[in-house]
Image (cartoon, rainbow, N blue to C red; front, side, top):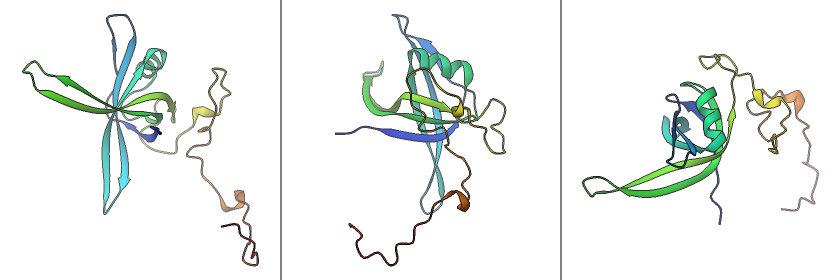
Length: 151
């Protein structure tokens, strides 16, 4: 079984930071993620972050910033004060990458902060995310005469 999600989008509001009664930081924000169907549509996806990641998001992210979020989908229920059961679907983020420097979310191409070496044990899978690709950068292989294609 696998529960993994990767999203790239813009924050619709500033993150909201709270603390649990035991003192654990939790930050929530909503990510606007575009999708193409018959027309351009946007999904607004609630994101939850915990502990140090929550504090970093609250301190360094703001409305309009583009981020990449990696985590898992969580579905939970709770009862309202009126006794009604409510269902909530959200993404619990395990990694949030800031894809723009502060102040660049209003246009232009993002300047990716992921290029700096990291010393926190995370890999840099997304360090080139959004980088413009030129045809000269791609090695094209002509397989038109290759009859031994394994699939």
